[in-house]
Amino acid sequence: MSLNRSEQRTFDYLQGHPEERQYWQDKVRGFAAQLPIDAAATQIEAELWRYYEERSAVAEPFRQAARAEGLRRTSMRNLAEFLIRLWIEPKRPKNG
Image (tube, rainbow, N blue to C red; front, side):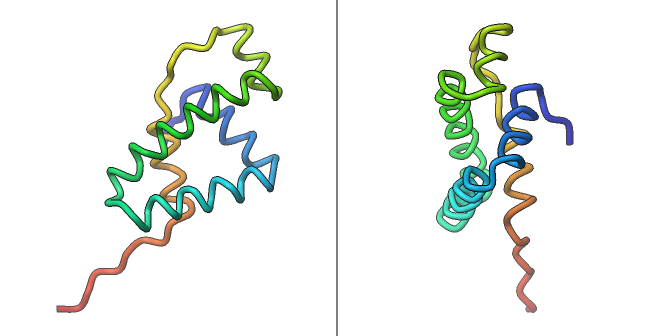
């Protein structure tokens, strides 16, 4: 899966900040437990963009990227789907 620059920046940040990663693991698992996977990905994608915007005001490397690239809405769908695959165990088919 290919992530855009904003998605990769967010993923790298989460990998380097365990408390943030744990927060997002809980959030992703919560959405996935309550919603069909496609709907969960849609919700997670929206939350990731809000997070990116918030981090752009206070944390590097987001702040630097926002200064250099601007803060135009960017899809976070690939990252949302990747996090679901990474952190959610696949549902096993029921034996019929």
